[in-house]
Amino acid sequence: MLKSYPLGVAIVVGTVAVSAVACLARMGTSPPASARAGESISYPLGAFHFTERSNRVVTEAELADRVCLVSFIFTRCPLSCPRITGVMKGLQGRLGASDVLLVSISVDPDHDTPKVLATYADGFGAKGDRWWFLTSTKSAVMELVQKRFKLPLVESSPAERENGAEALAHSDRIGLVDRGMLVGYYDSTDPVAVERAASRAIRLSKPAWVRGLPRVNASLNALCAVLLMAGWLSIRKRQATTTPLLEQASVRRHLVLMVLALITSSIFLASYLVYHYQAGSVPYPGGGSSALVYFSILLSHTVLATLGVVPLVLITLIRAVKRDFLRHVRVAQVAFPIWLYVSITGVVIYLMLYQPRSPESASTPVAIVPVQDPGLASTGDRGA
Image (cartoon, rainbow, N blue to C red; front, side, top):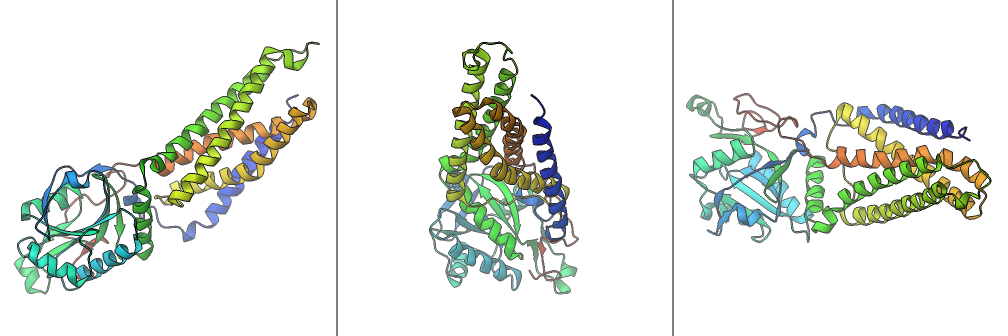
């Protein structure tokens, strides 16, 4: 009676192994482990008090229910800031009819008054309702950049200025803020990273019911796994007697549990399709060994769900309806480990893809140092 289980287990193990080899073969084209490290964080920005170019006061309350892409610039910067602002201009067009807000914050508030920022914003065609330019006191800006966004902001020394350095060296990364939480950094010099930032911002700006679907889907997968295990344990308690199968309590319980598992999987599929229709694809934010693990699980999960669970469960169901129980059992024992693996890995994929990490574990820049790094813009690097 148990001879078919090893076949199902072997199919799972073989698919996972092949998926891992296939993913490993493509690791050379994947970003390094640190390339997307700043895209999976969660850190509260806290309170702030800034002034928009229109002289309107902006506080954290106005962003409490908004998704924002934030850049740091100053109007006297000749090279990198026009480039960064050009990227933001492109995002203004890319974001279309979404509710995502663009925010450019001046790191030179002594010079960049609201009037100066208004002239600068007009030069880039910034729409007042979609793209804000903010300024504040010098201490407030330093506090926000260094302690809240944890990004470099360094004033050049007189000697450095004599050698051609600009007054300020600042990060050219774009920060993604989701309702007051800093959730990612994106390199403005990388078009692929900028596109990921736009896609993620649009996804985060979706209605609450759409944003909640991944958790619903993970819960449905977890419930399905529980129902499958309960149904399997129930059928193992059936008695080898002359009593008809459907008159045995354990068999009837098994039938109910497996039907519930099928219904749960069907609801999951519908919910999954609705979410990805609304939000699009969700890229994995990590790299290196974690990416190998994630994509190996994802590929094996997808293959087994499509080519394994769907046809095997349908065959099992048809044979049960026809009361061809002997052949039903043979297929069910192959389908069970595959279906269970798909359900469990559905939860694992959710945890790896959607659960944020702390800024420290995400390897975000947390120290202000005089040495240039990939996210620091100055005339000695990519311009000020």
